[in-house]
Length: 490
Image (cartoon, rainbow, N blue to C red; front, top):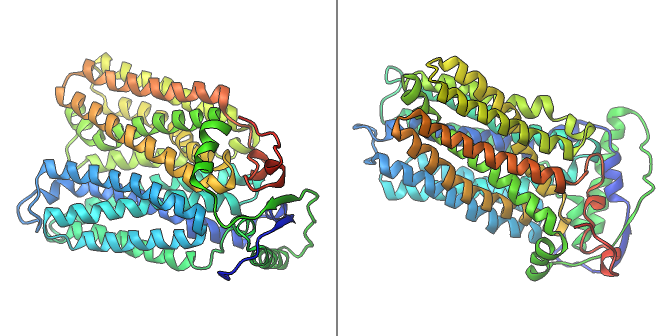
């Protein structure tokens, strides 16, 4: 891609051509190359939670205590939030491909560095940069996926890809059982291998990702229309060869006034002045799911141990079952977000999970000692919650203009993670520590409330973006219609 660009006002049919493409090997390459990182994230977070106890033991090779493990978790979250914001704005300025290569590279280096930890300060530093890489991935990957996947299947594909986080979490929980077995691996080796596995899988994703092109949508807006035309033509040629049929020319076109960059003040204006209701929606969805998910994710093992006498060695199996139910939610419900519609499904999944979280609280209050009853309701709750949480990423990716897409994802992810990542685990952890079922139920009542609030906000503010071109959901800032004062929905 040439550094020298000539800017002007152009008319293009690239968005329509991308949306008209039948599903092909190219789209599978996008899904595998860009979506694989969610498995890594789930693997990473679950592995760390599972090996945490081992790190504090004598002979682990790392002189670290329980309090420092908690601090490392907080540092990882801070890194993810800052990484999302830093790399998110670079993704909108420099392009999707550059950043999804850079952020994956940072993740790989930091994960390998973690495996060689020898002191707490080094472990903290490695966890910070691992989090920064993952946070940057959320912004770069979601924006690239939605700009390359046809509109008619964008919802289900996005949800399934985000849901694969939980497939990684299930694998991480089960893998930790093997790696922490001292009959197989020494106490100072198994946990290091856990981190190395993430790096190996990330390297495989890296090689697939190298063949995923830059977003043609980003290219033509930033003055690289020739490069965008070349990429789309190559994709169309490969799709025609695979399906043996000519592709129809789209009727709709888009006129834009190209720019190499968008001033930050203009980007900020989008959320607060142009789309205030959409911003409220994004905040409600992200804070709601982050609170409930972080609270349960970080405290499920201790909750099972405290209230249901589940041994620590058996906890990973329960966590794996829970994680797999989270994966099934987006897989089985994802297609409904494209057929039934965004508003109905987003509000429905949030409200259903909120209602079931109330049932969880009532199960605790009932005094039942059946761990299987608790797990049954927990699995049902997060079957819906996982589809809702995945739809939060889909929502903020598609309801803001292309020039702000990555930064919008980063902003709402950072706010949701910062608020939910602190408040959720703090509340759940403190109430688990009381050993009182009545107190513990409060955490689930609060979690139910924030999820229900997200569902109510979605009921009124969600955008019916199903099977609709991104440019129709939110007109690019550079589009001629917008420059001339065209109307934009709030």
